[in-house]
Length: 333
Image (cartoon, rainbow, N blue to C red; front, side, top):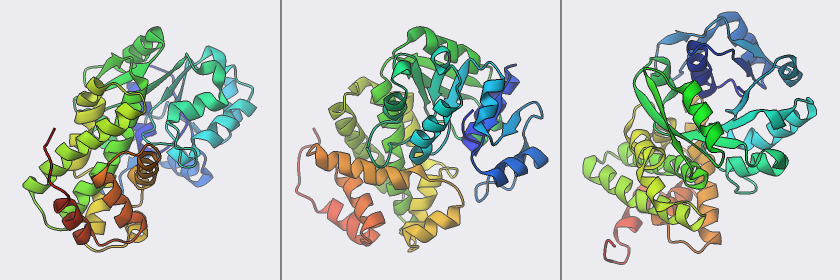
């Protein structure tokens, strides 16, 4: 597991519970020290509860440690902005990654290139292009750790690898479906975070269910429009990685992206709100990526564009809502 954030640790715990040998590489030494000494997973700002990290999971800081064991699957669970650097570090270890399954559980785009995460990995490791999968769906780390029933999808071109990942992750509380549309699954998982920020802004402004339901429904169309343009299959966006993840992220108290939007809607500056939630909110970075992809492809994405203007151009959230509502009237279809 490359990445010792709570999502990576939740999946590491799940795999450990399933009887697999799991190790976690974490870039920050302080984080490694904390996890090694305390063996605790905590969720600042989301829950007062702490969860025990299995003692059988090894945590290390030096990536060369990865060569000391035979790993069947390497899982990327770092932030989107750290993926390329992590791949380059992995290449330097001398590990025979060609014999490993590669899985990404990262939801976002690479900020500089606007590439999907699997594209970024394959750009650095072209040999694994047919041996990479992505896992996505409505799956908050805290609920996975609590063993609440969860359903996700694993998508990839290699059907055998996808089925293997399906088998090693699945158990009584975590169900995995296979999928072939890696493009659609990745885009859905990334862009839904932008809509979660929009819904959070709505919450912060004091709006209720009419507003949020409209944002989710119209936002879904924007995800489909952007995803289809980049090669995703429309049907994919109505599945777990699309509609499923979108509704969970937009309505849940656990969503860091929704919480970020809520703070902004209440008047907190975006940079300050990011510091206050004390964890990574991928939607902040993805908003810029989705906005630029839309502009590059001449797509009309009004909700995504307004979230961008609020976050990056200091536009008033109330003004953004008004501008969305008074746009030129049109048919729903």
